[in-house]
Image (cartoon, rainbow, N blue to C red):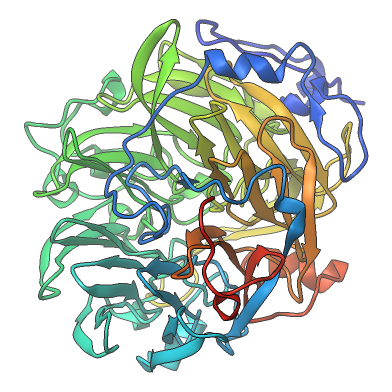
Length: 620
């Protein structure tokens, strides 16, 4: 029987643990949580809600606009997903009822958030990527226009993990989004007319595009998917007015390909050298080494830097690619105008378990060690919650937020996790490791409240059995080599997942709500001290931001893996919107454990279910 050891980490501590008989180490914040049922939150011992006031931070809320609008997936450049609206608050959220619904008819996973500008809501379906404009001034609401881009059906056979779309963006009078078959398109907001369509790659080679477009000024930023298909990862900048490609930066390859030059000043010495995107790979493997950029992008107006993460290396068989495999599982800071890399940091060197680094980068100003720092907060698939200095990539904190066995701790001197030798895969040998390939948190984005100083995030409680098989590269076919089966982990609270409040300054859980299934929806925090999120089995919840008490819940027709938003309608009322439609990684568990059927319905809630047909309201 392996001995289980629970580790706690501080920002100044270098942890090295030895294990008798190759014991499995599970590092878990859940070990310090009191047991509770599946609908009640539990506070970490010694953590009072009131103490949040001493750890509050802030963020740049640009691009601004009306507080009642929602024009990008995260609402702001910082990826905070915080709304200043407070009509709906702790005292009245229990009165929420469905005001109206809309179905787009697509039965793949619904992951993107609807956007609202003025009196119109814009939503886009997963494949076939149809766009809809809904008139919020009319009951129903009325359809202003619908656009069908008719992407190539061949793309369906290349998408590794469902034909999803994680979002779309609005800017310059245009709705901009990616198609699964590697095109980015721009539509006129008023008419739905296609203004331009740019092809970024050839879907026949295994490249797809599932990420949300991101707009800053006159530029649109988009990235690719296909890390399991032997693609080379990249991020591209397009001209918002014409769709012309302005620059394209690859994740692997020469310094020229990666856009590394004289401005590149990483904090750690292992990233200082020539052509590391080639030399950290076996000869000839870097061009097919993945590092796809399919996550969310953030932007710092003060420095004009964009931040984004790259995916796992390819193939997923680590024995075939000795080396750190730069720049996969990495965060890049790039100049938004030129694409030049300014710094980079690799979350999981020589990633052996498919722990992509694509999860969101939240740009928060936080008091670290008593000093306000410009930080980047990132919940990685490898189960570390990172706080980096966003000016240079230094790791300020790295704390585990869920069970994991692959790492024995974190070395702050080198900036590298300490790999557990017993958890390294070997070809043709079965291995159980935590977390699985999708991590203890996948792409689902958290939210941050400057009122509490807490982050709110859906997490998992799962491991995997994996077996590696050596593979060869054939263009347009899977370049993978890893077979795996996910399973839940026995723990103090049980279940496949949880929704937690995380204190990024202290590096610990403030409260948690255990859930039966993985929590794969995004979250939204509001000035009404409410946090909204959904569950994979279809519950939409509103909880108290300070203590996690469930104040409202409604079962929907399908599982929820999308992102909620809240906005002011033209009638002056605050509404909350959430798409339902299970899919993506959750669909694997759905087939086995009886999730709701796939769906395609967007739900809009308001107090007492009132809408434009009930007239205007005054005040808040």
